[in-house]
Amino acid sequence: MKPLDMTLYFITDSTCVPEDRFLPVVEAACKGGATIVQLREKDRSTREYLDLARSTHEITAKYGIPLIIDDRVDVAMAIGAEGVHVGQSDMPACDARRILGPEKIVGVTAKTVPQALEAYEQGADYLGCGAIYPTTTHVKTVITPVETLKDVVKAVPIPVNAIGGLNKDNIFVLKGSGIAGICVVSAIMKAADPELATRELKQAFSALNS
Image (cartoon, rainbow, N blue to C red; front, side):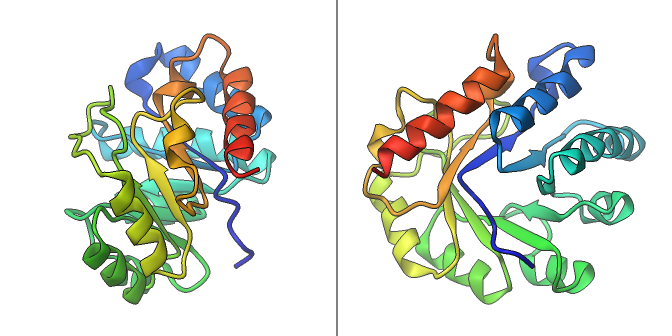
């Protein structure tokens, strides 16, 4: 597997936009420079999830961007996605790795150093750590101090991304944290111009590390 570019990890939320706008937002984010796309659908049936995942994968594949499926290893396998992301209450990373094989990407949400170490030992390729700020998504938010984020980064040799309420104007708190990139949802999904928003987020992250 080639090295992951974790710079701008875009997580979708179809509840933010009308149905006919969802795929155009995904494409705009890809044009704007998203380096990974995660399809996160908590409330769809398996059939609906599969249909949306296939349509999303057609777009990401066109831009050479990995598509990660949240939680659903079966959906990831069925559509040939590049990987899966699992949380602490989802399938353990070791089981996801065993099912998907060594060539697929397995990401894990880790909010503490023990969780990070366990995920790494179980074969995770990267970690998502947060929430740094309160979020407007329907995912339950538990705030993660930046100091904890720094400890997680130091604890494991795999990339760690910050997540949770991040936008171009507030990521300055992450300076010096050692993260590989940022995960964003609303800052792109709810933007009037998602392509521009994606470009500005990448520029802000680059400035953070300059």
